[in-house]
Length: 347
Image (cartoon, rainbow, N blue to C red; front, side, top):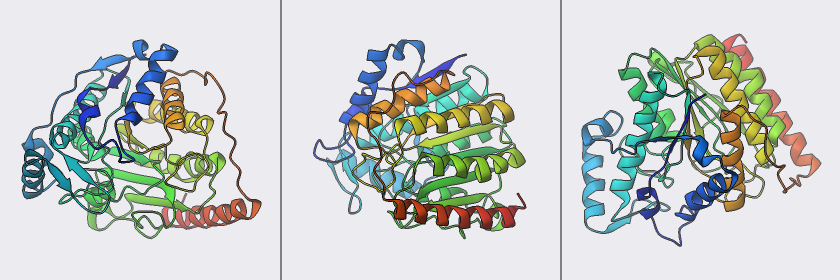
């Protein structure tokens, strides 16, 4: 079983130390994988930059040029929460290009799966602008790579607690990529309702399951088991990409869901089992959010173990504390979302 890993020191150079999306995220994850010995079990995937022509597969050329010039001039703010530095364009280009190269290796059979430990993240990046700490859409560019290689259909499963509005927007009118997301209702960027389903050729190729504060492991797993996996079975992708955010963890400071590292192991194991069933195991996991350092590192360790087909090394030391009324509200929302999607897609 060949599982690849994407990482480059350049990813640590982007950003500001005071920003919540900073280099310590990757440093914590890499340190934990090295300490557990898992790092050496993964095959190194070359970190290669995407060309501006490749970036233009999903981003507008004027935006790419503007970002390049902003970074050449030392950086600056691109919206209320997203700051570029002098190194951002290079880091974001290599993050995207490395995910694209990993997608190629997985699609062509050089790897069974790959874990892309990249930053800046990507799923909020729109065709014409940066937002939500994201500059280039890594998952979308990986999907385009697979399609260019002849993979007929790609599915993107996004379990970041924030809705991946950029990825949704890029594929909203297309039928060759299925985008499915489980995320927190009403949270930034305030998109991703159950009624956002795509248009034109993309009708029915966008599926959102928004859940309010207090969602637990079992709620995400039920969303997978009762909606997402049946849809994937019907769609039969040739490659499954996961936009793997870990900011749904109960200790994360930016959101209100209450997952555990054990739950993320189960989510990753479900993704691996589904990829094995539908697309010869071709699975690409790309890091998105996650801002509690210990939790992020533990969740990434558990995801790695799931990709290797192994159980967790240790249980999550943090126990979610969610009021029963909040849990009941989540279950009501989930029941409604499942009912809507079952009726819509005849599941």
